[in-house]
Length: 325
Ligand code: UFG
Image (spheres, rainbow, N blue to C red):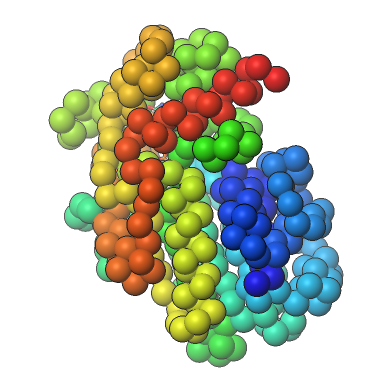
């Protein structure tokens, strides 16, 4: 199959391109390199292009006529989205509309969309299944939810089929050591803890210890990047075969607290980290854990790297490579 991977130079997109190629598919990356790295694209053609540039999208779709488009290009910082909603609605929503409209024009009708657990807002119940109310708390989550809603209308009107995958906390790195997380600025817990251990940072700040959880720190559902990508591959096959639009939550179904993440990082690296106590970060729900049973049943998805030690080991291997190069 021929797949256009929009945002293929980013953290999740680059792991996806690798998996597509390793599975014998043809992956074409379309990325503006605003936060991705061309050297993370380990194969296939690379198009330096921006979703604000409608002619560039039309050109890519006309030239390659892909079987499907996978869309990973978006801004991802919740806090920033509250301060600068314009940036998020423009990039995550308007630019995605450019892509969808171009797909309709070019008769490309299969779409895999990176959505997020942030579409659910403050959980009403745990674990969060697909039926959970979607009341996003911030522009980031709302920009993704708006695309999900538009996709329903586009299916009815234009026959564009889509699978939306709502990620919980993507983490870890490719076990080969060739790829990993490279955000600038880095805001995610696991890479920050490991940077504090490797010496790239001085310490790690825990954002609040008086949440309603057993140790008082926030609980999140960390899913290995390779498992996340394998769900995309299964979703792609299913979409092309069954032509049925679906939404899936992707997580491990197990929650780990910030304190547990720090302890596992210390165990895996056999080093201590300096911990600073900080205030709560605005908009952080106490607990976010996925019920991913629908993806397991319907896609026959079976995550391989479910324990936090393995996720941490792969992330640490990547961090060591960063300090040694
Ligand atoms: N945290 C700290 N210190 C840090 C960084 C994070 O204590 O320096 C805590 C956070 O408060 C949170 C947990 O670690 O409780 C995880 O934080 P991350 O920033 O790693 O991840 P989030 O859960 O905030 O966000 C992730 C994705 C978002 C997505 C969200 C949906 O990065 O894009 O999950 O649940 F919207």
